[in-house]
Length: 112
Image (cartoon, rainbow, N blue to C red; front, side):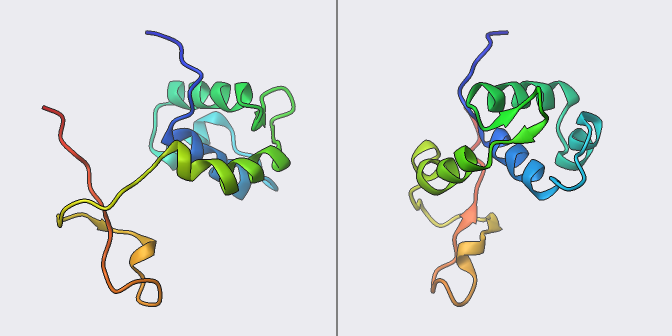
């Protein structure tokens, strides 16, 4: 398996989970259970976040300034999305009545 330092969508979910539980830090097994991912993926995700200077594995804390900057300015460019054709899927928060007339959904494309 090739080691990568590129952040993934799982890393963003991990980062947000760490922020949400900063007053009561979770162990890796708890993160694994609550995010429904393997414990090995939790470890890899924390390593990628540490490499990106968004999280410190040594201090077990989120770098709040870097995380704020990343979430505000980078996420939309790191994970670009463009509306596609009409499909079935899980409705997103963007589709709430006061945001939009159209419903946007998360749709998982099947690989060929």
